Image (cartoon, rainbow, N blue to C red; front, side):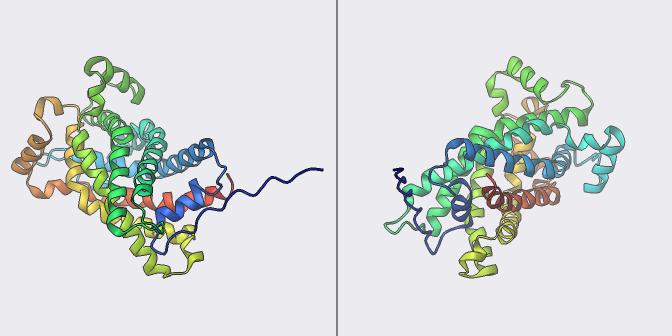
Amino acid sequence: KLVRAPRPAALPQLGAHCTPFDQALEMGLRSDPSEGPLKTFVKGFLTGFIEAIICYPTEFIKTQLQLQSKSNPEYTGILDCAKKTVKANGAMGLYRGAAPLIIGSSGKQAARWTGYTAVANQLKDSKGDLSMVSRMIAGACGGVSEAVFAVTPIETLKTRVTDDMRRGTGNYKGSLDACVKILKSEGPGGLYRGVAPTIAKQATNQAVRFPTQFFVLKTLVGDDKEQQKSPIYNGIAGAAAGAVSVILTMPQDTVKTRMQGEEAKKLYKGTMDCAMQIMKNEGPAFFYAGTWPRMIRVSLDVGITFCVFPLLSRYI
């Protein structure tokens, strides 16, 4: 007779104070205890790919607005930048430098979630719950992980290619060409220019988003466990958290973008010198250049992530 294999042990119930990320983990990355790393990778890759395809034009415009000179700006705002880019380079001009960001989104998601869960598991109390402070610490560690392993090299390539197109210097044919040339002329360190402000930005991002997502979700659905698993409500909560994190991290993002520009090596001695020069030459308000396109992109980014993960878990 055939003997039925024993049923795998069920995942423990989530604590009353779990975050949307915890719920997404149960619904997505850990929906099946026997699920291997391949399914995790596929879901992470697809989520990052979908999010990047939708959001990249706003990231492109944000970068252009941050790179332009305040004294002699090329664009008057978001719409002006979009119109001039499309007129000069066609609609696909808004996707210049997109390849590393689109491909790298899967790596960013994987690094963030791995860093978060590894630390969160160490900080849980005897009941398996996480305090608000523990969530913030775990989130910050996830941000550091994604900054080091994915975000810095990816955004360096994106910024260098975007800046090259803006300046009309024609140094790079595309992202791959830029990667090869940077590695050849500057070594691996060339891809990690601006790593300090990137770490500061990503760590703050995730430390802010975790508790904010939890608060917004609780406000929307209370303690209704079924509603807390809704992709729509998770997406709305994620979008709100993304908007809050943008306001708190724009200065770091502006410094990071300047440090990754084509002329950064000639213009700035380091991260602090870059920040001081921006403050002196362009004023404190410039630290918030490109806030609106970045807020749109990040809100979409986080919202889509929390919406897509539960949906993919139903089919993968």
